[in-house]
Amino acid sequence: PLASQIAQLSFGEWLVASIGFFVVGWVFQFVGHYFEKKKPAFVDDVIGLAIGPLFVLAEFIFMLGFRKPLHARILQEAR
Image (cartoon, rainbow, N blue to C red; front, top):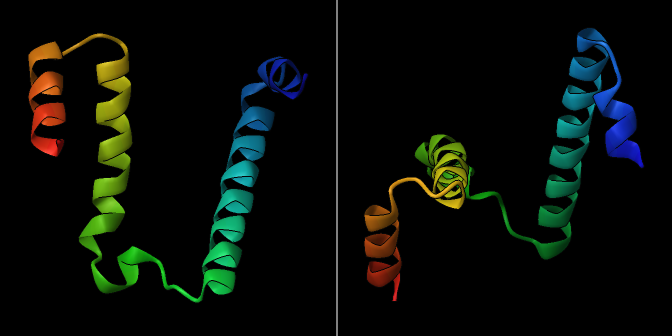
């Protein structure tokens, strides 16, 4: 699989591959926005550009089992 091949790369090769995948992901994202005729949310609100990665980080922390009371409270508020 591709993941195990990437895991065996040197740090420099891994970094180049990671940045490449990131850029390709952004290209696909913008292509999707073009076809949907919707502009990205961060065009109207630049703060969203910072909040997105923080949201992913929080989800990862919750997935690892940390801050369970906070996670439960957030889920309750979302309902």
